[in-house]
Image (tube, rainbow over all chains, first blue to last red; front, side, top):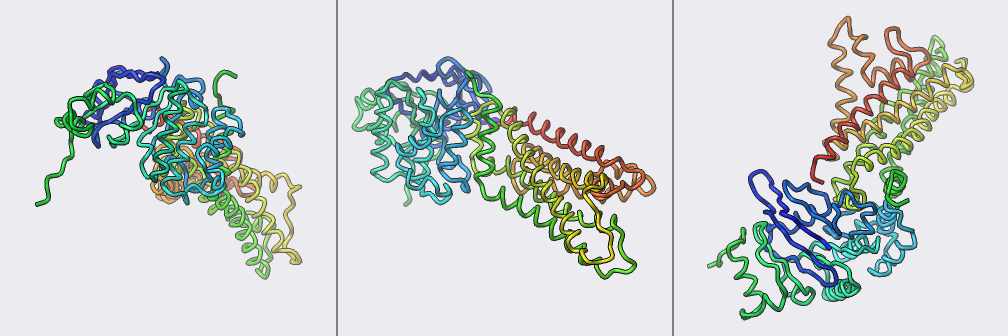
Length: 241
Length: 256
């Protein structure tokens, strides 16, 4: 379980995440929705201890990330499709991270098979396509067989087959009783993947709901999302003519 | 073991270091640079009159360390900035949140490799010089001579320490280009500045990396007024420790 308590992050005078309190439960896929710049990635970075919150805390199974005994065996994360050195092979990238948490080398080959990168594992990761980079990121997340998974925009750059693969994988992981927290700005995709939704705008919690509840009373889930975030969208274009 | 420790993190860093090509290019280039400089010095003195002394050949044949220190220093810098430039650092800290353990492991692994490469380079410089003067009247310098062996080993130590200074500078500056520039400035600017001190230049110069290398470490007997070679190398180790400590303090407080 992931628990955010009054989580707050400021960059100068701008408040990126504003007293966010959420519980993300195991056993279901929880979608993390919000417009661009609403604080989704910042929240995920704070859960992983990469950014320090100005106030509040983020707990994974009741423990702060920095106090975890075996971080990769507790929480797996896909942060962005570029969190690797382009000159290193996919296999060496995974082997290094595995070594840091005493994960056996056999597990590296196993996750390479799961994400379908076994055939290209010896190639430098910089030569991978965007879809392959995402798969490498998913492999890192799965490396420690963690009970909590955190994925920031996992379907970015994936082809339709890859999107379906991610969707099935996430649902399978949740069905095994894991906590799966997936951010996206694609509402339609979240409708297919997620059971529960956490919606934020300008760093504030707008709704903690289910896909069914949000869609009820609106023509579409998209309309419901726009209505919810109307007051909390920073960047919006106008009609061209 | 119920928690990750330095042992695991050091293995992680070693796999990372050995699995990028730049590591090996820089290490090999450092050895080659010293071998070539040593040989060039020897060849240059072959037909020199009066006949060169053993110390002359030996001291000059280690001059390639000026280039080798930049290459191995860059190796240390890239070990840290390479991760910030690519986003790898986020994967690293997500796996090992204790950041100072990561930095310590980087220093240990990089220091070990750079010391090995530095010793190999230093020996290559010595050998290059000696091979190039074979068959001439110039007396050979033997590694059996304690003064010669000491200078070769201490030069390797100096190069290892320079790489560690690179790790520290990399952790402070985080941007590859800026960090390499900073390291080069730290190595060269003090030497130029020391010249401005006039009569007390030696008193200042004995604390300056490059002057220590050329006048106290990579020579059979130090220039009067400078520290003994081993003191100079220890001083370099102190600079490295200070740089890494600064990096460690900043690492803890900055967002990744």
